[in-house]
Length: 505
Ligand SMILES: [Zn+2]
Image 1: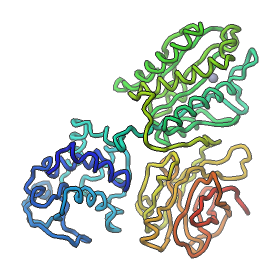
Image 2 (image 1 turned 60 degrees about the vertical axis):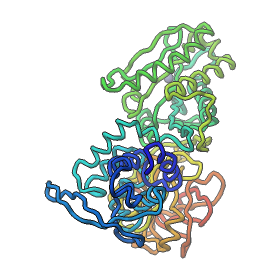
Image 3 (image 1 turned 120 degrees about the horizontal axis):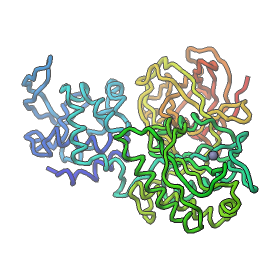
Image 4 (image 1 turned 120 degrees about the vertical axis):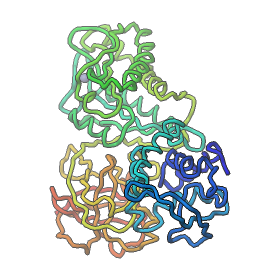
């Protein structure tokens, strides 16, 4: 039987291809279910996860006594288990198990594709195992063995991190102005450099804005929260009579939050190495009750590069070489925080150069029917970590990004797609769920579904497309149900990317 280390590559490989169950959880289940490969069952059958010979299993069956929790007491029960030719087959079958029947897809909806191991473990309690403390046991193992590190690896390399860059101010809000500097423009320029560098290193970057538009403070936090950013970096320039660089973290952090101070330490050290060099005063590491620091769920920091109303600071801020070095220093601080060397290029080709204009707008939608699985982890796009079933998320609210400037169209950036494999398997579309960047969902009905046609949103297959519907369709229309704005029929082209470009009618 394999050791924990020996199953590592296979477990990660299966997650990479299937995106069904996290490596850390698989590994913890291996430890728990097979006594790290030492159980009688594992040795007799290569079955590392105690999976029973339930349908649709058609292979060999091995009968074995097991403990089942019934009304809080453990009973000994003899059951049939799956017997595999190799332990690798067991790892593969374990992954496929969760989506192997329609019922399992529903039962394990909160397991499938979930990237938070605690949620996965909790969702396995009472489903995968009757043991009411099953999830807690798995979590304990994952923590003790540091298995969550496996979830961040792929092919032995580090996966791209999810980094939110908040370009301060914008649009009608210029921020501070003085000495020929508009703060919002300075922030946008420097943030773009930061983003470019992070993306080149293979990290996932979402930014508040890529053009001169207004975005509210809470909206910035919501964008990062909903995306599941790991850190939040807000870039600003100071004014009001002073000199020098300073940075802020939230002034009322939980005592258990050691990551945020560490983020500040990392950023402050690398950035002040540059600012000191240019003669900008170091005003220190500070705390404040700023909205973006308070309302973000992840470690967040706000940088004030210097005082643009101070002549000598302004001269430095305008220096293009300084801007480059400053941006690079922010990147170095981020990499240090994650324990990454800037020379290591992550292996995942996750790139989002189109940090587009995005104003989040929430719509509540009700899932009325479902019936097939979807995969919203797109090829090379940012913001999707989900994968699951249409009928597993009944009652969820939906979330879309709306273009802010024109206000006349809904712009569904990075919506995700319906999984081709699922469509190929099932053929019949009842209703589909598109997972949106914040993890919420958008429900799509076929045109002949039970709805009243409201707005028609046109989707054009083109470059820069933001969601893709793949597979066989009888017609070219589906309808989204957005109660706050009515239901919308959507035209789409199969096999092509699709961008919602305009609301008609
Ligand atoms: Zn500012």
